[in-house]
Image (tube, rainbow over all chains, first blue to last red; front, side, top):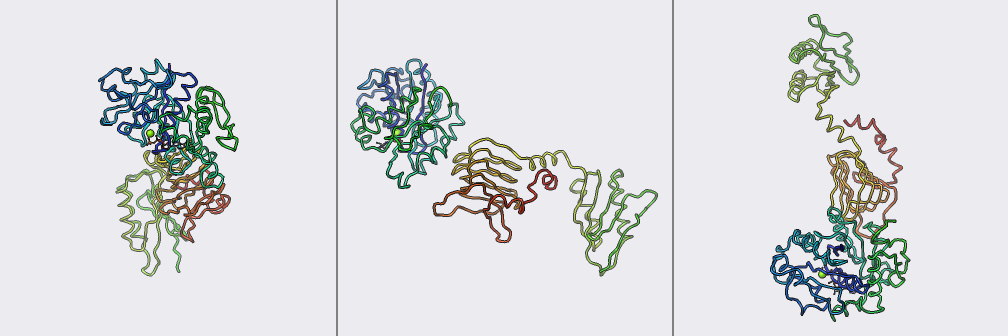
Amino acid sequence: MGEAIVITSGKGGVGKTTTTANLGTALALLEKKVCLIDTDIGLRNLDVVMGLENRIIYDIVDVVKKRCKLNQALIKDKRFECLYLLPAAQTSDKSEVTPEGMEEIISELKQDYDYILIDCPAGIEQGYKNAVAGADKAIVVTTPEKSSVRDADRIIGLLEQEDVDPPHLIVNRIRNHMVKNGDMLDVDEIVQILSVELLGIVADDDEVIKASNHGEPVAFQPNTRASIAYRNIARRILGESVPLLSLEDEKGMFSRVKKFFGMKS
Amino acid sequence: MKFIFWGEPIVIGNKQLITIKGTRDGLTLYIDDSCSFDEVLQELEQVLSTKYTDKNDPLITVTVQLGNRYLHKNQEEELKEIIRKKNKLVVQSIESNVITKEQALKWKEESDIKVINKIVRSGQVFEVKGDLLLIGDVNPGGKIMASGNIFVLGSLRGVAHAGFYGNRESVIVASYMQPSQLRIADMISRSPDYESDGVYMECGLIDEEKSKIVIDRLQVLSQKRPDLNGFERRILNG
Ligand SMILES: Nc1ncnc2c1ncn2[C@@H]1O[C@H](COP(=O)(O)OP(=O)(O)OP(=O)(O)O)[C@@H](O)[C@H]1O
Ligand SMILES: [Mg+2]
């Protein structure tokens, strides 16, 4: 039985899709069987970031509406045998997907996959509700900006009412020089306010944007700052305790990174 | 000024239903609690007319002690009406040893301290009757409200509203105080527009002289709000 993890943020544009694509890639590199689901109906992106846009035939709405079988809609990744994508619909009406429909799809996928990563749309409306419906765990992505942290807090409050484990946090787009000058919230402050467990931090890295544009997630590259960060996060998801690298953060936040799975310390 | 003392009880018939005592602060009417309400009214008319005073006397305040009698609102009004007719008398309060269950529950609710263990996050509002002891934080964008005092064992970074039914004596205490707004009764104060650090172990309360909410070390509370101490406060507030 696999596990479904929703990747959410409240605020738009903080890196949910990028995180989903890269964690999927990093988990596949670790030989896990992974399925990504794009739930951002009408604004699908995940297929583009994964470079799979040209392969789409059916989408999630077709599956919910039983116009095709789940297997027919899944797209196999270019690079990995064990990585699949269920794309969002681009044209259909958002209300065609329901929480019940999602739960059904996810419980079916859990039979075959180790991890199901759900890319959540921005906001707290229907799309969000669909995305969290079938999830067992949640990852909240925030950037080191007040408004983004505020929305992450809001989402964490909403997730507390759902049937998911306490969420874990990824702080994305950290710029060390700005943090040092006090122009950016530091990770400590963010974790203190949100009081959730930190799963990892990802530097702001041009390579991320370049890679996304080429339809090849950065996690695939051997040693950029961001790719190392994503691969470390993937290992933490598997339950390893991987210290935060100095590349990720200079402060040595080791003690705060707990295992995502298993023991609570 | 002339003092009048009603030492002797007034006896009508063979049983006395109303006893009047005078003190420097006014009159107290003790009303027998086993007779019927009609009898009380009747006797009150007579007693007050027999004991009427001089036109030049100052206004006298009257406290009515009902003992173990419960009066409805309209009965209280009738009683007041009779006393008010004697034009030097004003009813200050009507006191009784008994209250309805409903009032008792409300009283209990409003004097209780509710202990809540959670983080009040952005967009969440948490409201209680009585005092609130929050073990946890109020994050920016979160809000807590209490009809009594608020004590936060944690960081207060959002909005706190104490005494929301209008109790200006209410206080807000936090281990770490960096609120975006403090509200007490109908007063509001907000954080400054420049970036500022929070303060540890402080309290917010209304300074009646300055007529605004001030933040101070929590040690000042023992002087400024001595009533915060324990149980007596709750009885008194009832
Ligand atoms: N660590 C990073 N370094 C640099 N750029 C990044 C990083 N993470 C994300 N970005 C860029 O930020 C932009 C928004 O990212 P992304 O699309 O993943 O956000 P999102 O949260 O999914 O947005 P939406 O709410 O619209 O779905 C993209 O252009 C992406 O390339
Ligand atoms: Mg997205």
